[in-house]
Length: 287
Picture 1: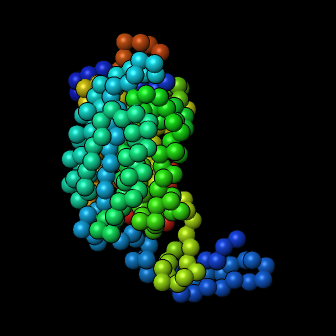
Picture 2: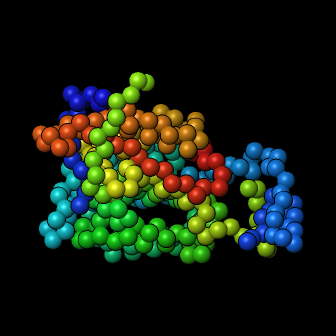
Picture 3: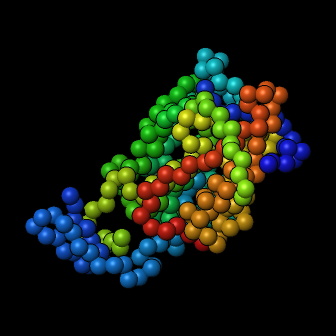
């Protein structure tokens, strides 16, 4: 159970057939079945992070919303934004924080980011701190589908990041359900080959603060459970562990160390579990 005494504020929710290459080996048969050799070099399975910068990190920090949206002020989000900036800066990312953005302003900044020169960067990170709904994300003036923001970086739309990891961390509600919890006891690539292709949706990772359909919790003093946990894990293990292991530790921390404490019985003593959706094709080490 969470240490409720450590929380300086109250809890709130952020609501309302192809050719396959294996090294230089390719075998394809008449019936379209494919046979490939096993990967022999572990280095082929890691993203190259040997660049001047680990990447660009954009942080959209939406706190105040137009009354017509019906969305409340997101107290505690500035704490999230500040901690994220410090954490990713330590990991050699260039940081840009954008506060209180409309949907169109977010889209414009993302489109501009997709046109940037990433020749000296190993990856791209985008973090949304906002209200949300299942499949939607709020700007200060309304909401748009999340895919409208993220699809800008697909391989067929952003050539500069093809083959590089594109990570999206989304702190927002994905519905209006509460998680009451339950008691318990306890591919190698040859890029010089002109026929080489990868899926346009490859090398993306989406780390949601909660699973589809559920509220996402934010402490008004300390920041959201998910971002608190993400920053702690990255600060402690970010230069040691592979990304999926890092995010699994984030899941563990959110699941076991936090529980809502509110004045409303229906929303008190609730739990939360983040959700990782990965289309990464290699292991990612920030170091």
